[in-house]
Length: 219
Image (cartoon, rainbow, N blue to C red; front, top):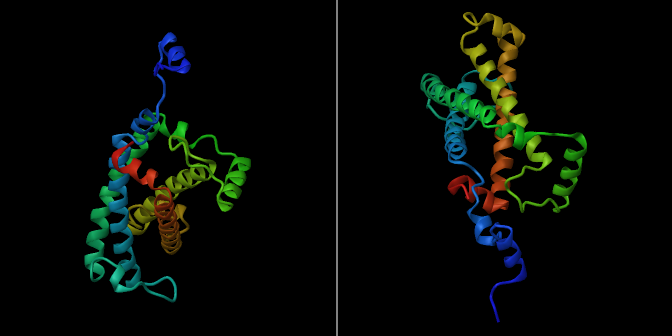
């Protein structure tokens, strides 16, 4: 019995290769530049958060402080050094990501469109355990909303951080946030949003291991 099936013959006649599971697995899902920027951003963000918690402890906004076991720097001066070093890495990495995201059309293809109906439908599907993760090349509406939102939050946390860092030199930027004190609150809540995003992001990566594999090896 011939091993060539009718579908194989049709594919051959049309000059196209049959799509196999092996071919699907070998497809590049996350290009190298995305993976490099993703892990650099994760590293810089962890440094920023941990050192930021130490800075917060020196002048708390609320009636609590963060445990020294999850802070970085040991004291205010040390935390500031870590925070500023990670800040430049995060800003440079973020600018490259934004530039390439727009230049390659990745943002347009991956994050648009976002519709309320789509977000509601995919949220219901996720809560009921029926949200499909078969095609990792396409983001569902919940992913689109979260990823687009975290980009906006990332821009806000950088701008509010600059307003806090240089309130006199960048007084117009500080004024946009409503003053130094308000900028601190904006910075804090943006940090909280990023931490929440990271927790959900890591949890979903563990629930869908192939998405984590794709971000490590690309395929």
